[in-house]
Every structure is written in C-alpha cells, then in structure tokens.
Image: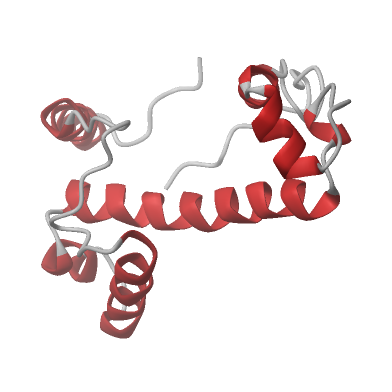
Length: 146
C-alpha cells in the first residue's frame, strides 16, 4: 500500500472546503415554504440554517452522519458483490451482520435489495477502473513519484 498524499502544502480554503455542501443545505432551508419554517422554528424570521433551533440542526447533522456510514456500507456491499465479497475483503462476519441489521432498521430493506432513488451506482465503471489500476500496479508495483 502506498503512503497517503500529504495535502498540507495544498490546503483547502477552510474546513468547509469551498462551502459547496454548506451552500446546498442552506439553499434547501431557504427554499422551504414559510409555514414549514414557522412550524420548525416557531419563528418566521429564519434567515439561514444557523437560525434554526439547535435540536433541528443537531437532528439534520446526526442523521447525515449515520446515513453516511450506512450508505457507505451499501456502496461497499454492491462494489464487493455482497456478503462474501466483504468477508473476503477482510470484514468480520459479525460486523457485516451488524451493519445489515442497522441498515434494515434505518432504511427498511436489506442492502442487497434497497435502492436510493437519488444515488446511481456505476458499478461497471468502478470495477473497470479498479481492474485497470490493479493491472497497472501489477506491471509496475513501485512507480516513480511524479
């Protein structure tokens, strides 16, 4: 395995990067009808997500963190070809079973059957790129740094 790149000499603008994800979430909140804003905050003077009560901000972020882990598991499940692939890749059986249980509890279906309407996996492309990388590495296992 190669060393991870060191990005200290090329840092992001801020911990938010360029603020693209933040801007998308803020735009979503800004697009909510006034009655939804009023119901969520009991105040009609909400200008940005920072103005919403802490319990709403915390719910949005904690759900995002939990979903990110489970969606990552879902992606890994499909990229690896299911249970056997994850196990062959080094995941412990108990870990896979726990993640399946959590996934089903959160999304109501087994990761093999669930589909996120807003995510499209291009597995053929992912597998092709992985195969290409593996073949290049097998031919030249220690490439010179560029």
